[in-house]
Image (cartoon, rainbow, N blue to C red; front, top):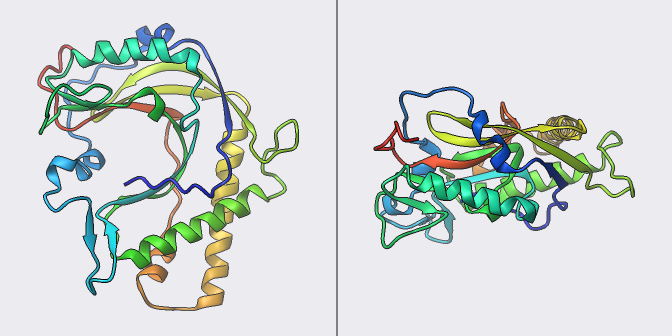
Length: 259
């Protein structure tokens, strides 16, 4: 479960230049061997025999079997002008797999080869507070969500957080597509961010996380419990590429040459 916290500040506006189809021939390098994306398989509904939630040891509450918390730009707000060319690309990609989920599902598929993102699910990850991991309890999940909200709120209040022209805390980000890159576990749309605001936002979030962790440790000392342990172990991560993942592999594709 990639949790989206509704009380966080609005996502930055996105301006995207170039059509998806203009970059199809820019595929970077040839990959000879594919493998399953471990994060995707961890949350494959067909592999979770006991459902997506489990009850705490004391039986008082349920928590997700996997919990992750990213900060993203463009969620549910990619320009509609990109949708036709993206759908054309996704339709072509469907022919490379024996079965898929996400973009289009044909009947009941128990073991799909790939997940192709629907257009509305595309996004650019700014930072990740927590990757998809198994939480110990509801206490841990709640503590992480509340703490990361304080970090995000503090980051946008920093003096060096980029401001939009009208002074709002949601700065403009301008993305230009560079290429479509195929990897061992996924395929991504690689972007170039032209304003420099993305790097500033990442720095503010990283600095605010460290400041909030120091404050938390001073106020609470060495408090035990799942929540305190989880906060002490939070480490913000930044993707190597500015990108939008649009295909993830459930397992190694059966027709790698076609891909």
